[in-house]
Image 1: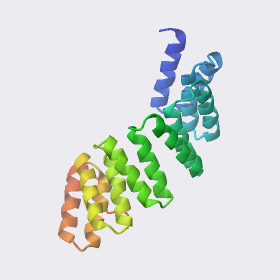
Image 2: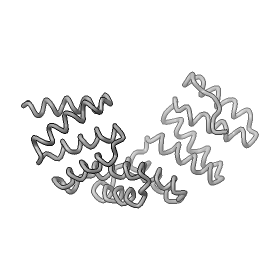
Image 3: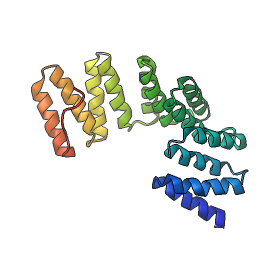
Image 4: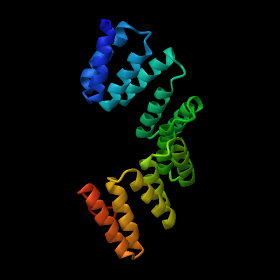
Length: 212
């Protein structure tokens, strides 16, 4: 590999190590030297995001889009940034653009569901989580968040069903054990509550009741 590939590989490793300042310096240099390479702007944006420099991240994602207008990873990441900035309209628009390109990408539906949940649009959140599960059946976080939504909406049977599924997929899912135990406690099913907590302790060795 040539020098730019070696530098790019090093920058990518720094991103994975969450050494964002080091990654930023590498991809800033590469993007200046090779302004037609969208990947360098993409990774520079990722480094800025890791440093909570959201506006700079947006600027570099937009530069990547000018080079490669159909770039679903950029659309997803812009959706995440605008969610953090509180601009839900832009966030949803970018998620929808990503779905138009890759309609089977489970992560997009999951992120949309989280956003809908924050907006108290429970029906749309549940639909989005369900679609995420269709595309990725072994998605414990999606089942867990659906369980929380059903619990919030008063549907305890559905909530129980999805907590159990989350635990089945991830037997060390501490929060799922906690919330399921709390659900049983609310229903005065103390034996089931105790049983869930004991199973959770056995699997995770780190359990205590939360969400009170």
